[in-house]
Structure formats: C-alpha cells, structure tokens
Image 1 (cartoon, one colour):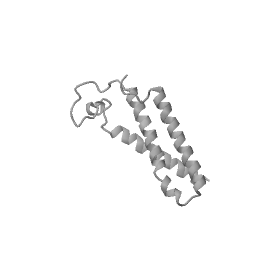
Image 2: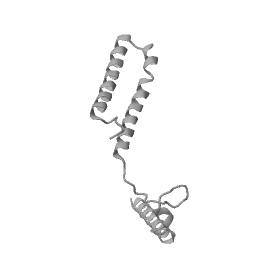
Image 3: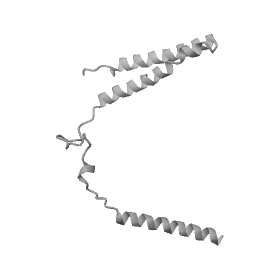
Length: 117
C-alpha cells in the first residue's frame, strides 16, 4: 500500500514540477501582435475583423447542409431497390421523399429561400 502512495506522490510531484518549469521558462507573451490580429494571408487587415454576421447567409448555409445530407441519403436508394422487398422499398422511399418535399415547401412558405429582402 505504501508503495502505491509513494509512486502516486512521486508522479504528482514530477508532473507539477514539469508544469511549473514549462510555465516559468516559456517565452509566451499575452499580447502578441501576430496572434491577436486575424490571419489574412500574412497581411495586416485594412478594416475591422469583427464585421457584422449575416444571419440570412447562415440560414441559407444551414438549409443547404440539410438538403446536402439528404441527397447523400437519396443516392443509395436505387442500389438498395434490387436487394430489398419492392413494396417496403417503395413505402420507405415515398415517405422519405414526402418528408423532403414537405420540408422544402415549409422553407419556401416561410420565405427562407428568398434572396432579396
């Protein structure tokens, strides 16, 4: 039992010593000019890097990602038709396509697909 405690104590002390030494010996500056400025191909930014975020563009990007994933789910459908029951395949495929069409109609009805507003 004492050997386990001794080993744990030595391990903890060694770890703490290494952490303290690396903190004291590191040459890291908190306000480094290069690290606080945004990266733009090595050039200093001409304008503020904190420009307003376009929530409209973000919404379009999220809708695109959702439909992109759904396309990836649609691609194997014709391949699975040959190896599965045709009636079950038709029901699942029709339900999936119906959900996609309802989602597209909802986005269209809410006006999320309008570019000019």
